[in-house]
Length: 293
Image (cartoon, rainbow, N blue to C red; front, top):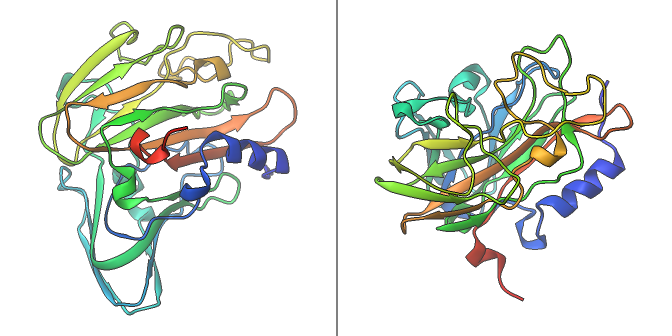
């Protein structure tokens, strides 16, 4: 059994969490992309959205604007109440599995939109026994036009010879407006997987993306790690880089003035020693929310 350790929790605290970002934001509108989690690490379900109302009742709608296959959920909640929306049956629709929509590697239609007529808090939970995490949705504080991607670079994403779907890290973008273009400024030594094309490096412009669409930026294989198997890769890895050095730490994302939301996920990350490996992630915030020193 894989258990969370104090060391892992300490690392998580330093990776993504700003004191103001630990809890979900109270708001009336949320955009989110649910990350793709390997089913070979104790499964990929159950998955839930948790809602909490404040002093007023709320009528809530959950949908995917660009994905008509996903059902629309409408429900009402009294004041000072909580509700769990179980979307486990729709995991293939909910998770942002790597896709090639409109010929753009990584493009899909998995942006989730939540609206309420009164203030609520929302978080998304991957509730597997051995690989759980929660993603606090931050409402308007999650939306912006400039982001920096932050990842740890010491641990690798776990796989075993029996796993046909290895774990990997990625940033996931939710598009809230039509005709959005993103500029990715990729640091030297980092590469973004680009399907059968050469990996993305340097400065790249992608688009257009429309309301409700999504983009998954996953690392391309670049380096090897000193563990067995030495490469850490298997023929079915889809060419995603999984060692610490491959993680896309430092990528800058900007848009043509249209607002986006960004999810970070680091699935089943493992140190080079010890036996534990666990999921980590969060919905990150744009530069204007982080503040200045």
